[in-house]
Length: 425
Image (cartoon, helix red, strand yellow):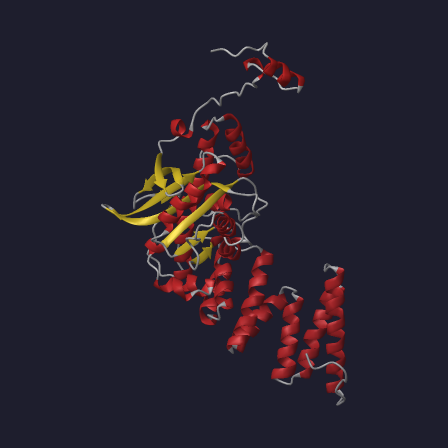
């Protein structure tokens, strides 16, 4: 029965400013376009907090990302030493979860959430061991608890994370989201390998960028296809999806995330192999060998470091990088007690006009052999090199002050009057 709009009740409502009738109900535009199920052949799994959409891919044991296989059999002893985490020594490859998130922003904090989380892990298969990659997607923010529950279930068999800048971003972000929904953090207590820090150690001198995509292209030789979308566009593509309901542009986001996960696995295996066998003939760049030498030196593997410096110096290096490596090698040889080798490298560098080598030879002659005339000769040559120009002012002033003091002390020793003031250098 249709209500009588001329009744006293309707008159009273109109007098109060209340609009009546269906004509005044605002029209809500229905979202149109392709749903995520239309774009990707995924599936839903049910959790105690609702359903979550998952897209799954599998990479078989013979898959290579660029030239690098996903699976590695290299021992992780050097990886464990570098990471200062001995737990890595006892972990099988199946224990590692390779994780990357796509988020609503890069600022972090409670207002940022991960709408897409990619996780890959190795599992036994009929052909050996396969790499199973799951991507957990949040169709709208209300599905976040379900996504987190589904992700926790997939991470449960693992005990280690591998990420790229994940210690600073992905892991804290996910921890925040789990905490906000009162869900236990599934990776709490896991060992965590952040490959960004290792990539910086290994390639900062050779490559201008250490983003995962750049490493993937220039180290693994695995360029991405035209499906790739720039990372900075991803939050806006998701916001557009929430507004329009059209998931078609998100196909490139899923591709971007999947390639990040696959690249993580390949890079993990590649770096483990590099650390295990730094003399592998596939290492073609001298700067890569020098970087490995520095890493071994920092781990106090001095004999290995010396061998790697020598190998790197035999490869194609620019002049500046060559003499930097010579300087480090000579100091390392001195530390190892091989003064003959140290002197040999200093003499080569001094012959090419390097001030540091003249200073080291002066120290050697003065303190080791008490050969003050020869030490004075090396200091004099160093002063000539400094005075000839070509050095930045602050470096020139540093050397000038040190060398003049050293010369004054040597002159005093030659005249039987040791200089006072600074401790012998």
